[in-house]
Image (tube, rainbow, N blue to C red; front, side, top):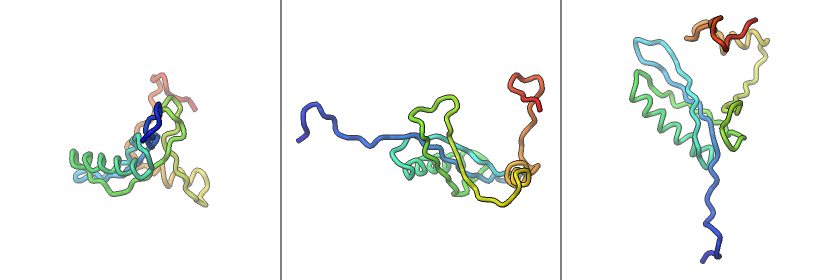
Length: 124
């Protein structure tokens, strides 16, 4: 019997970001990394939810889920401007430019430079 005025204790749900990796099927020769956010009571639950969504995403398009999920517990209670939604540390002996070239700027990314006339463009 519970005491008057007390509600049953619920597990607290927190925010988690989960990165899943996909391989696009032919005729594409691409990989995709998606980061989604989930409200869950544990890291394991967040990964479960993300992997369920990843399977559905893979069935809906020309891509397959590669069964790689990396999760990150968001420290902030609410998602707001500037909230950190994912972080991954990687040890490397590479110099900064070599590291960026090896992992983030290989020349095979499908990305475009910032247009000079866009308000968010940064000048170097």
